Image (cartoon, rainbow, N blue to C red; front, side, top):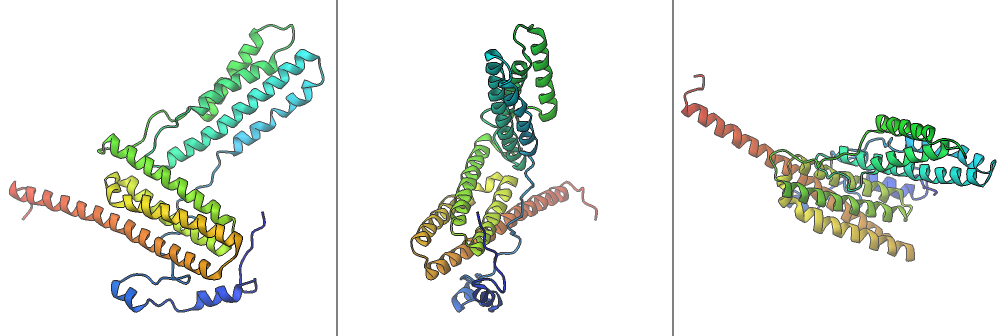
Length: 320
């Protein structure tokens, strides 16, 4: 899919340059309320970059290489008799399924490890892949009229090597100590739904082929994920952020979908500017709320320190 890259000498470059060079001044009402300037030229909130919190996904590299190892089975399937063809094609299908399950299991494990609060994968894909790999290798090594011992040994060795190379699936839910399971579950559900809505926003805005809007949406997603990380550090803050994760984020998703549908029918520069202004306002408000959560945590720490100091003074344990 072609992607347009903007610049000084690119189409619409003059308009973008003018927006970037224009002074970012707040209106009187916004300045009185201490809010950030609104509009397409509003400066994104600091501390949220579209690459913040992202990691290189290496979960697909090894499984994709393993897919190549199944190709010789296709060649040998048609070089023998009917039994050889049936065994090789069955082994090919079983191994392809095993390596696909392995790739999905590694993705699920990477998502599990990236979060401080997460549920274990509902399906142990890597364990199913282990069993299917052993079965596929056993079928591939079986010879018509041969014994059963050799295929079983080869299959068992393949299963053991699979376990040593990729390990098991995560088997326990992960949560913050000192927080009840119900709160951890609510936070996990809220973050999962939030990630789904962010993914829908990014897919929808990608259809517009507008590089600037795609970057704005990615910046907004980075700001929202920063709030996710703050909530994972202290799930008790979920009550104060629930409106942001449900009402505001869902509204942003719905506005993005409607905007892309409108642009597909008839591009409207005014609608684009309004949508860009909405993204700027939402990003600023999410960033402000994340900062407020951090300040609340600091206030709680200050209270704990003050209470402990008063207790030490009452017990006469402070140095005068």
